[in-house]
Length: 197
Image (cartoon, rainbow, N blue to C red; front, side):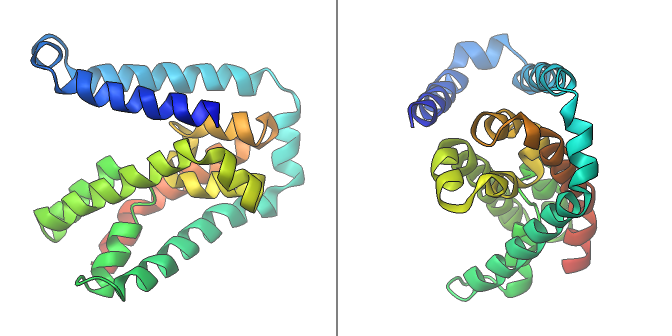
């Protein structure tokens, strides 16, 4: 719980700092974010590489490891259909937003180019909220649904931004499975969105 509060505070402070004129004029935020993400992935790589059991875990759980991205994609799309019953958007539009699987930067651009700017913004916000929920409620998700659930909750982000949370709350032994899940979902995001729309 303490970790979730710290993450929430960092996010809120980041929003205020990022909104300040000084930061906007001094830093190239996109490049800074990209560099921070690279550093994060590098440090997680060191953590994974330091454990000899990771590749063994993938081999022993290869079927389960492949079922996670399949289950994540299927569950997300079914959930999107269910949510569409309560919204003014069509099933197709809700499924396209859900098919971002947390990959907000790519999915929002694809949806904006294929469909509309309005739906692209909704995809951006929806997928950012998915990532924030994963980061903030990780302990609750793991406690209620088990260690694999946090990987699925992170979606495409389970290979980068939510990977440290997976390691922290599920354990290092799930890091490689988490990366595999994120990579698999990232690859299929543009394909599924284009097929839906």
